[in-house]
Image 1 (cartoon, rainbow, N blue to C red):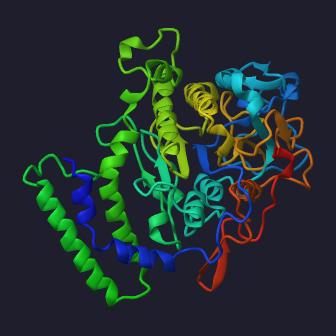
Image 2 (cartoon, helix red, strand yellow; image 1 turned 45 degrees about the vertical axis):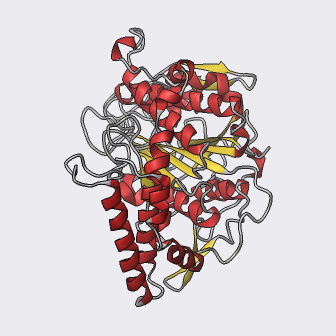
Length: 476
């Protein structure tokens, strides 16, 4: 059931109240502070710890030493028992683009756009525990209670479309990753900045946006009357509780949900896309159309739908889109935590994300949107160069890979190298941390990361804590 635009607008005398409350929850400083190179961000998150050694960080020394006893030159505390012999890259690598960047076979779909990417191979984490490592990459802290990067961007810059959320999350279709919704929580920021979950391609992409099918007795008029009543009650409630931002968030969420009834279905309607665009993303509406020579067509189709949804949301003004690959449940694994078999686990997921990500980059570029859209590929940590059980790899928080592309990024470059085994950064005194990546993202959005703060618990908190340097070498 849809409401007319007029009835929606007439339903909310509380909009003025929400606007007044929102001003009290706005940043003290005005952003952007300097001319931004990007207006919006996409974060591609590989949940479970993707292996840099098998996808992006080619190590010939592992090929030469394959099967030999591993010797790290120092005591190593493995997460499990993954200190077996050296393990060569599971797939062959080939050079791509003018940069000659070496890519593993499962991510070869990124070959045509590799010269747009800037790789960081000396990323380090603080923990080999999935939940902590994931929070560190999503929030800048390895414990709960801190806002997601998307929430900080929403808080600092606001929305570019009042009919859609500023921060949207597209989870893995099989379930949530470690920490669940804490990965996109607003924490102590005003609650309206938390991520809104959308499942593209499902019967109900946005939960509870429309009345349940069983509620056939709900008419447009009765729903409008209910909204007016809620607005009046909220106004009375807020007047007696000044400074309580929970009510503000609830009012704003109701208002946004009403506006989304008009905007969200349009944004997620793939039938508006030409067949060639859907095919580029690997979307096949009829499973019989899936190519028989692509074993991983389902992963490609599903991740491609998320990427196409992301493009349609971005061009309609969404600020931050978080796309997840991998969940926290299920066996055989459908996440990146490949303790038992890297080829089995990584193969389908890698081909799925690479196909969708490459299509998204190409599509944004042909529409002139890549120039001011920043894309980050990340994971919670890497995997060890030694084997676990012959076919798997254990956790490696000491070194892993990120890559970025889009607004303000210089493509075709590599910043920061890992050692010959991909075990630790080559220069152990100058690693790259998530604070640096977050500082760089905020800088490209026109924000000084040290000045985007929020007072919580007597402390001026920020996304980068007390750390972070802009990575100048990857800036265009």
